[in-house]
Length: 108
Image (cartoon, rainbow, N blue to C red; front, side, top):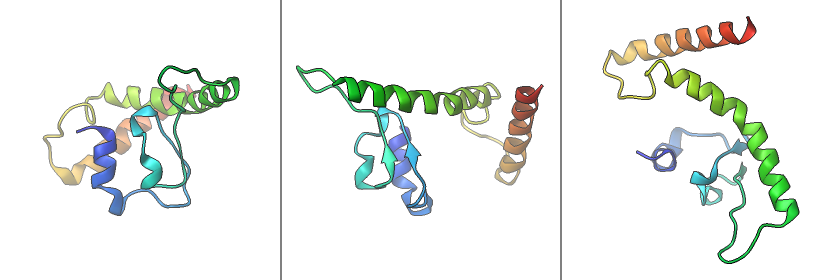
């Protein structure tokens, strides 16, 4: 399931309205569901982005790259990259352990 579709399905328990969501271009149209969101500006058909729009897209991508790299490190453990086939009650514990390992590696 695509990330945006999953977001739409789970919006009831989702993100608080005061939280600023910085998302990639796959989330175009999220402003209808969550007003406090930032997505990169897409190039118009047959046109070009202005220098300001390009600078804004670059700023957003520089802020997002840290979390994207962290997500990639988590996916190495295959707990979120594939279907989770173990007991659901242990999922939180396993995620906490994996995130602890990643945090430990980042500090050392």
